[in-house]
Picture 1 (tube, rainbow, N blue to C red):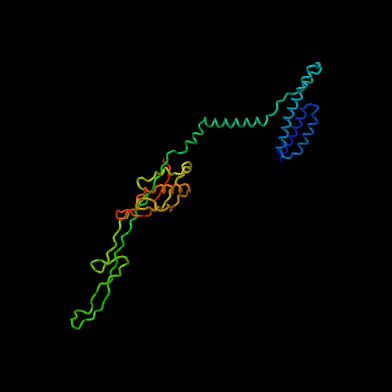
Picture 2 (tube, rainbow, N blue to C red):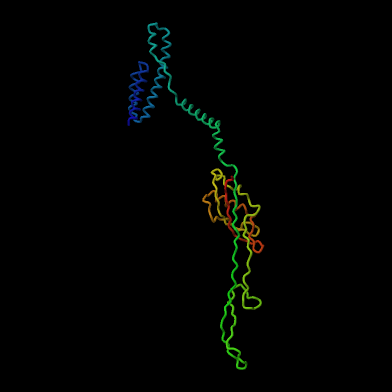
Length: 296
């Protein structure tokens, strides 16, 4: 509240002083008009701007009013010379165009100073230029060999034939469990099914000609030094080509890193190592992990 009153009093004093410095014929009239205009403005800054404008107008009016009087003063007597000593030569205030020009010049000086002292070079040098990304392969899955089917025994009662001497009343006959569908009995007819053959399976993955991960590192992540890893599931055929769209099974937490992982997985079509069963390539689906990280 005191600051506002100080600005108001300062504006009023500036206007009164500016009117007093104007020519005597215009001093009273200018004071009345400027004070009336000051009373219509409530904002302190607006009142202060008005006071500064009045000071500038006084300087202009004094300069314009002085020119014709100087021409007339050449023919006046020496008795009137003391009157000219009362006029004060005041420099006008800076115009708005001059203030803008000074501000623009100051900005250019700051920019030139930043480049001269190497400030901009330190900011650019802080961004790493060498980056490295690796692909984490999933370990091979070892499937357990199923246990052989159990053999059960059933007690069978045999009735003796009257014409044949009965050696015994009972005997034990081996009875095998019913074989599962799609698995024939053993050819020797021994009552046991052959145990399932163990399949040697090797899970596929990225081949030796797989695209370089640096080419698919998102540019925004490079600038922000953002790293991360994601797991992607791919389905490929016997030739190592994609047979479906890759999908994320575990996100890295960054949408940019996840998009780079999917783009790399798509670009690797035809460069995957197919899965093998007993040494023969087969159609398969498998996950593998791709990691983007900055080089040391």
